[in-house]
Picture (cartoon, rainbow, N blue to C red):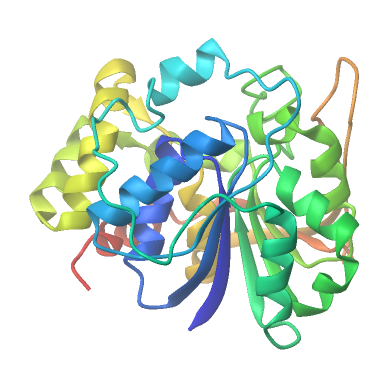
Length: 307
């Protein structure tokens, strides 16, 4: 069983990835930290607790860093709803005893969890701006010894295939905190990255037909996911579940084609958030550039079945 710390900004697609992770027998979730992105770090923590409570699960939720001057964009509200969960109206419920989300020093809390495990025993799954992770590496560099791999949804590595979704150069997570993205990608950690050109594939998205297939499963995870996805699918006719790719690349690496690379990220100016990718066999980043779409859909539907 893989020991995982989730770093998220739930967010509709983060929420679907979280539901699948909570329902997976292959993952032990050590903690979930949140950060400003699709929603504020506070709203993200509350949303994570809503999902855990709805599924009867208890995990440690840590409200992570909020960037100074953070303002949730109109675009994020239109995509993810005012509540960040597709305006699904999910009740907060009763927070499970022993699981709180306000910590005086969230980065220290994350470091304490990681360093309590052996060398290369902890995996990070990151589907948000990399603010928390960059701060973790800066303040507690020894944590790297305990981290096996980092699975990331972020960036765009082949802009000829897909433009960014914030500017023509940049994907949302990397644009939101480009300095943090550059810090993490430029580290010597072993990273598996799913970028926008892969995660935007239409044949891996949720449309009306796929939404009905999810509802038909009838399990608690499936019905919760369908409830969160219903409004976004109704509004856009289909919805890309970008963040699920990071989880899939962790649990089912065989369905992906990858290339090794070194990646740096422009941290300012017109091209802020743009990936500068150098493909080389000694690169620390494995970029997922292709996926078996049918296997991805099977992974998604199987992940909603009752444990």
